[in-house]
Image (cartoon, rainbow, N blue to C red; front, side, top):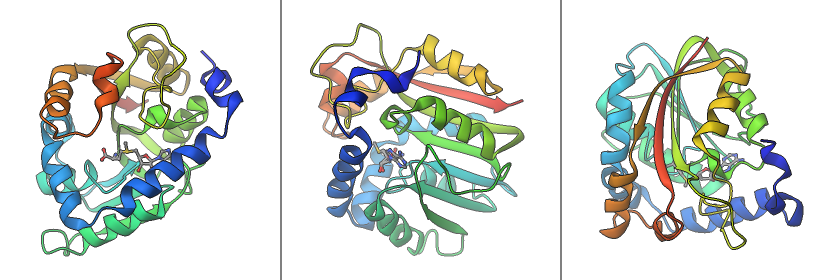
Length: 239
Ligand SMILES: C[S@@+](CC[C@H](N)C(=O)[O-])C[C@H]1O[C@@H](n2cnc3c(N)ncnc32)[C@H](O)[C@@H]1O
């Protein structure tokens, strides 16, 4: 599938609206709200992180770091040599830096990088490990995003990506900014990964965990349940 040529992309400035939505969302956050979010999301993050730990001596890059729900959870479970968080929201990076300065993380190396995941401002082959949680669906050009992920990965780099996946046909009123409109199928995702030399080694179905978090109001994502998506985590490596 050419993910860029969907009807949503041609109708409006999807990326601009997505960025505006997250700027507004993260503006409300501080390091305490980020810690709550991180703890709430740990039933989804932990099983995936545990499959690729330890991170000691590694440079880990989180693509779409937000307030660091995935990145700082990884740092709590297994401190890396360095964690780099990339996001195009300046408020996301403001909160991430505030979290990095809290006592638990102050001794660790965290770098916040402002940038677009379709054009990542990092050098080739810089990452031993790549993380990405609930961000890939937001990219209008998923081919570009996947190529960039492959470009920054060292050979043999481990990659964990999780997001919502489509199980039924696309319909008109799917909000892009809620990681719904841009959801693709697992088959389309597998084709994309293979095209850039990223090999899927494991796939975990986390739909039940995410549904529980949404219904218990621990994850503010009603659209996930309303649109009956699946949530999958992929453990992969760069060939
Ligand atoms: C749903 S949030 C997830 C944040 C974090 N990964 C987590 O799980 O808590 C998606 C994040 O992706 C970022 N994002 C979306 N599209 C992006 C793009 N094209 N370039 C960089 N960041 C992007 C948003 O700013 C937002 O912080």
